[in-house]
Length: 272
Image (cartoon, rainbow, N blue to C red; front, side, top):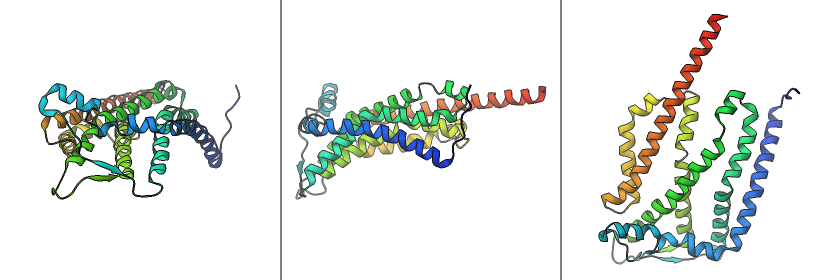
């Protein structure tokens, strides 16, 4: 068995750079592909949540006639020379990043994996799949739930009848991207809690103690991004609360395993 050579800090940086470069190549390939299908992507994906026939609004209408959305009163404009071209580039890169995210995670995992013990490597099998799955669930939640609700709320919000909502294309795209990506990042909460528990910053007791506070924060967030009706707020709030409960469960299991490992190490040291 050949011994693993010791790597300096600069060697680690060089190794990380190559892993990141490989992931970027894949992301760029998907970005170029998305750029050539820009018209289809904008009509069927980017602008879809701003239309009354979007699947989310249709579903809400099937639940109750009071939730039907007949019109979304807004108009999109491009007020800069490079506005449309810049948004085509931005949207293409975002789609390339979303599609290439699992491979990015895989390359980062390949960089981290050699530094783990064999036990840790076995326990962390499937980490890339779990992180990617949570990310895509978050993206879907952001796109099909948060984005259309927010677009509807902001497009119908008025402080005066004299003001018409005519949004710049850059404002619309950046809002949709931030909502969708924000949801994808938010759904990484269980993974973040796992690592914070592992390094001792967070405990399940701490999370349980502030459960009520989290419920209030979740309800406030849901009220901000949804129309003023309890049903829409519930659609947003329930998944976020379940995500928090899942984080508590993961933290509790991780904390229990850590205590058991410590006890086993103490027993081994006393029997020597």
